Image (cartoon, rainbow, N blue to C red):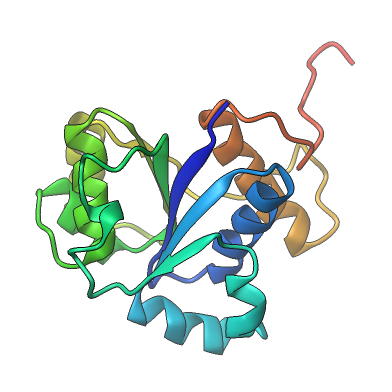
Amino acid sequence: MNNKLIVAISGASGFQLGFELLKSLKEKGIETHLIISDAAQKVRQYETKISDEELVKYADFTYKPEDIHTKICSSSFGVDGMVIIPCSMNTLGHIANGLEKNAITRAANNQLKSERKLILVLRETPLTLPQLKNMVKAKEAGCTILPAMMCHYIKPQSFNDMEKFIVGRTLELLDIEHEEYKRWDVYE
C-alpha cells in the first residue's frame, strides 16, 4: 500500500475529481503533496464552490506550480507515485514530450525517470490526432492513461457517483483498497 503520493490538479474541466481523490486519500491516511496549476484554480472557481481552506485541509503539503525547485520536483524525493487528476491536454503534451513547464510537469518527469507510477486522468472530448499521439507517447514513456469516462454498470444516481468511480479506478491502479463504488461481478 502506498504511503505518500503527489496529487496534481491541472486546468482541465473536472476539478471535483481531484478534490474527491484528495478526500479519499486523507480518509485512508495517505500523505499527499498537492500542486494546483493556475488554470486549475480558475476552473475550480468556475465549476465548484470549493474554497481554498476546504481544499488544503485534505492535503498534507501544498506547493506553488511555479516552484520547480521544491522537494517534490527532485527524483530523490521518496514518493510512491503521482496522479494528475484531471490532466489537461496541455499538461499531457508537456509530459509526453519530456518538457518541464512547471512543478507539475517537472515532478511528473521525475516520476518517469525513477520508474514510479504516474497516472494521468485525462478529461477532454473529442480528441484531436495530436492529443491521441501524445497519449501514445505518454504511455510509451511509462504513464498510465486513465480517461475520465462515464460508467453505467455501477448504476450511477448522481455526478458524484461517477466521480467516485473514477477515483476508485485511480485507487485500484495505485493498489489501494477502496469502497468508492461496487465492483461489477459478471456472476451476480
